[in-house]
Image 1 (cartoon, one colour):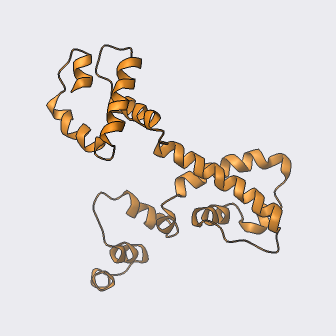
Image 2: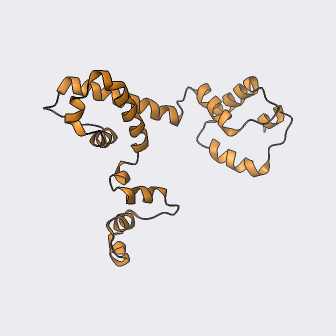
Image 3: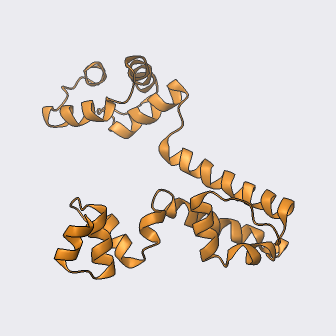
Length: 179
């Protein structure tokens, strides 16, 4: 409410419950710090969108946004992969993060990675990071192919057995038993 009042506006009731739901994971201290930052930095005359407040809260509290955390994780895995290739070589494949192992399979596997030419690593890095960010948290579904992706994008909840059954083409009776 203080944020809206600062801009001479009333907070729309239709948005209030949504904003409160989005704010529930933040401490009161983080919200207050974010509101102070927005009030001092936001130059427009309208109530800022929630994304502006979220960024301000994350910055004020020292938190890393989920998008930034995903970028950092993908970059860290790329660097670890290069270190592992250097350390182990093609004859001893180390244990890999599940997402890294999935992405690396799609890029030709461990042996292929060990043969990557140094002058083409920047292209490999871009390919790896993009694929890693897409696959992270979704490896199990992606491993099922298009059916797994369909399950990820469906609107309704389906038990794991039903998803597997649909992907494998099982009858509804078989699917019910699998669930």
